[in-house]
Length: 408
Image (tube, rainbow, N blue to C red; front, side, top):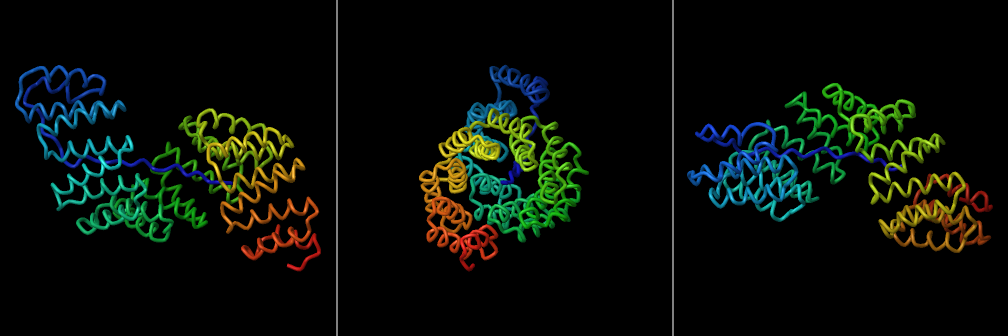
């Protein structure tokens, strides 16, 4: 079972507050719903005003566009505002945020860097750039920014949380836990720090402490869908499957557009042999997230367990078309070919899985099973032995060697 942990949202704050316009007409441009502010700001722009005032109106309209999800128009307005007022930290930060949401790494990072150059005495610009670097998988660079932010302000909980996220992305979970703990010491109501620490504890299989952190996060926010999702996973690992189903279902009730929760609940249903419910979850996940290779893999495995090898092969082949060369998927398709007594194709997929990663003992176990089914005892023994070399505790490898009368 593959765990899907929904990432936390990155919140990038403005670097500075903006002044209010003296004109009373500004109220319509600066207050109310974004959809109302956009035409109000547009109307203001038709009036004569000072250059700095016009820059502020463009900035505010850009903010409104960003709130409606139209980041391209937001960037256009922020850029116009910056033409009028080039060194405005708030506008640069807002444009950087919009660029980051669109995935424009170079442009976003350039703007964040400009903000840092304007103010080297405060931690917030460094924190903002650090979170953007995390978004673009530049984790070590992000840690460097968070280090600098902490040096400037050791009470900045966001800097500690961000550095923890960087360490967690690098699978440095003990360091991540230390940073999240420091963030929590600064702010004992920091829900996302409790949640992030729980995620690192899950990776370390410290499920008791993970449950405690998830409960704290849920106490702070009873509608925290990701908290229920991760708690469901922990409960599953601890064997409380009914509680796990309940938590996955709660997460989906809070956020119906949560395909990772639906997929993981389907995997749990399949492990309980509740295949009708599993298939319903897999079908819906694929409808919501048609590019998910893992959804097709999970449904393909379920079809195999139900004895429907044609549908299993169709789903596993589809998964490989979405993510070619994936060793785990090749192994699963090999197992389906093996179940269908199609040994040549099973062997070809097992070979391809090993070619993708020759350090995975299960791939050798699968190839050994294919060799055994073909009657090729010597090669089967060689592959079971290789699997045991890679994982001395492998029960399938030991069992295979025992079946074949070979000494482990």
